[in-house]
Length: 171
Image (tube, rainbow, N blue to C red; front, side, top):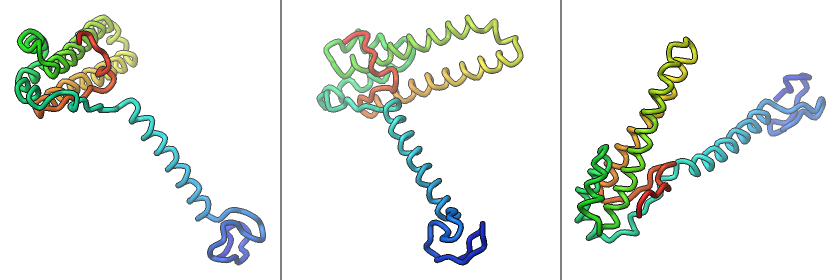
């Protein structure tokens, strides 16, 4: 192998040219790859902190989950979080899902109100587009959270919704 900087011959496994001391392309590429892997590992670790789907299913009995699964699904349909609150008051599983459904509903309603307040800014050319995109993303995230809660409760699981799952309105 030859050095691309000085043209002198060097061993195939060399990391630096013995003549000019410059790093080989392979060495530079490996350093960049190692750096990218470190950044990816750090991002993955940080991401787990924010997008943690904590499973609380073990806190509830199988009997409770089976008996109240249908009522718990209703908690994720807007305003129907009241059904498990009123009909299954003695079920910790139903109360868990009713709480999450209520939190999602309150956050979705608050997002709608704030969106209507900021609607007057949408006539501004660039700012209006940015505001619309931000609210679209937030509304899609809320919709995804409703669907996620609906699906997990229908399977008899109790998964906390990221970001909002730690908010407890009633226990």
